Length: 453
Ligand code: MV4
Figure 1 (tube, rainbow, N blue to C red):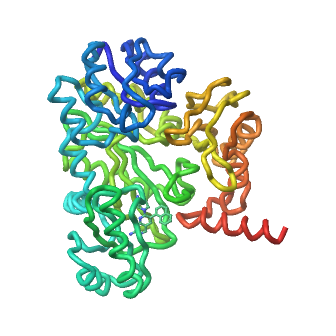
Figure 2: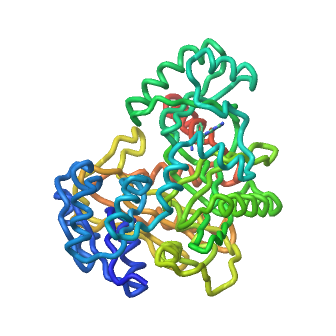
């Protein structure tokens, strides 16, 4: 096992990793930007190193500075968290070549999954069902039209270098495709430095459901039960839950087994998440794989009674996967993302937190790096806390979450808690009757209700 790990991240995930290292008896090194001098991760790690100015490109994305920090502190491994350098294959490779263990998959797996079209082909070959699509990078709009004609409208254009919804366009007709294709190309070029596009049949009314895996260096992969992530706005998840109110036991077991087999087939290692669309007939299609720990990993931990970060560190150190208990889903877990933002306009609301009370009690978990008196810097994402409610049934988990949100008190900045409470009280959410279109409908209805009064 490692004796010291550097955490190349900030906020709640850095703190989450520090706590797990402490449990494992591993010393921690935090890195922080000049804007994060007073942040909890820098205060609670055994050592902290300033790696540059506030701008992420100068600090949390500054590879030479991060490696220097690892060098001078004598860290053996680097945990990238999520975001920043977590899915940067070059960084993973540089870590290895500099003598540090990168806590994540091998660079070639990160690279494969980073090219969303190649990932799609590879997973199709490994046996996972995929949505009908172009199977190639589209050279020009004429080729796009030909493929779209064959598979039928609506289609969705996706950026090969994208993922997470960036650079996606839904096209309902040839004329629409003609218009959107060059715009999507420019957007992909500007955002990722790569204009490559591919195309899929657009599945409307589907659910966004993902499967967590972990693989060890002996080639063994374990797949966990699903996370339902259909409550999203602009491809940002807001509420996640497990199990999905929509899946049945048979579909769940098929998704888990097929994902595990495919991940083993390609030699997957470390933590990973395979994202699927599940249509109204419960047919599932692989969309993309994320080669990092995800924000919403705690709900899986709650229903399985495990610590995925500790498992991830253990397999990175060469241990084989070995959970002390039988892996069985029990009960129901929901996560709400508390963002520092206006609940109506979604405009970020950084600034000083004057007063802060988080919820607690049986079945409530709070993952956050916020504290009263802290000033949220404006340079990074607005995730302030994750509240996770765990209970024997879905209904009880919803009640517990509502009670937790109602007893959360954050003064000084705006948060999306009022929006979360509205969603949790909505008829469709309570019935489990929602899909990827849910938030759009929810916000449209709300806007209309506001006008009517
Ligand atoms: C899709 C899709 C429907 N059909 N692909 C969004 C995030 C990225 N990982 C993939 N995403 C989607 N891909 C096909 N072929 C639906 C989504 C999607 C979505 C689309 C519109 C509005 C909200 C959405 C939420 C999750 C996923």
